[in-house]
Length: 410
Ligand SMILES: Cc1ncc(COP(=O)(O)O)c(C=O)c1O
Image (cartoon, rainbow, N blue to C red):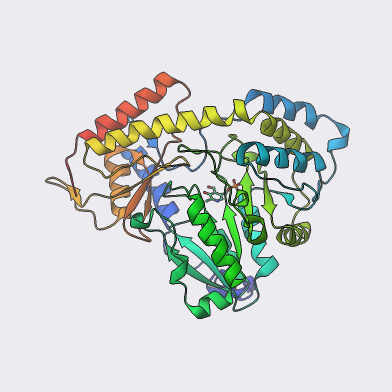
């Protein structure tokens, strides 16, 4: 029998139906398929290209700084929205890498990762009936919270023919009027596309014209393979209409450390700090101080991470192209997003990406993430575990050998 709590759950999480839904969602299906494949072929290595986080730990100088700082009495306190040194270090880094000038007192606040910032920002702006524009496929957190608060989400598709950039001009007059937030994410998960300065300039003009705040989710910004890393805040007028979310997760191998920062428009940063102050008490000061070390030493950290994923992605692109896939080198992130084949010669037909992804796990023991929101694509992540160059080559050769056993039809 259900406890009385069953009747108490809020509608935003399903109300009285909470926990009763038997639909199995994408990531649970992948988890189950992986477990089944491991059981069916216990002697065969499962190559995990489904993971969205770096395969290595933080750099030694960062880990040793954490050890020293964790032992200091003065770092035991709630950090709240403080730690001035971290804000100063983030401002210096933003100048060094992106050419952006920021006032650490008013234009930067730390966050417990980009995800946490995305969950808090709607509380700063969204009243019932207000609109947040999200891009699909994509990372849904800000849209989910918008809906929790009674707002509406309008999804704009990221299409290959548009370079995976949304067409803001397709929003209707009513949507433009009610829209308060537009979510952009570049380099993009899952497409691997980067924004261009021209696109950011257009988005800035659109936001200004329609009184909208651009929320640019930029955890992959340092992982850039083409030209220089780009911040919307470096574009003219960027700071008037945008905030950008940065993270230690991807470009510094510090995913589990949970640290990032929100930068840009001072009013938006202030509102974020106010809501954040009512949600968490800040990240452990020793972690912030270790991150200062990482930011100051970025030239010895991020380029090495970038080179590794670029090398792996190049190899994957070559393999997939040889097999007939329309695979192109991504511009940033660690993801390769490719259209699925229709089937394999003399075998399976794939109605959608989920079926292809299941087949890859079951038959080839290669785990990917399927995306069926806009077309049918799978995302290969270059974050498979391979601690040495030899090991990396072995895994990539193994992927090639396993896939080359099949003839794909497109
Ligand atoms: C697009 C996007 N935004 C945000 C995040 C979360 O980043 P963080 O670790 O900084 O919370 C991820 C993580 O996968 C992501 O892909």
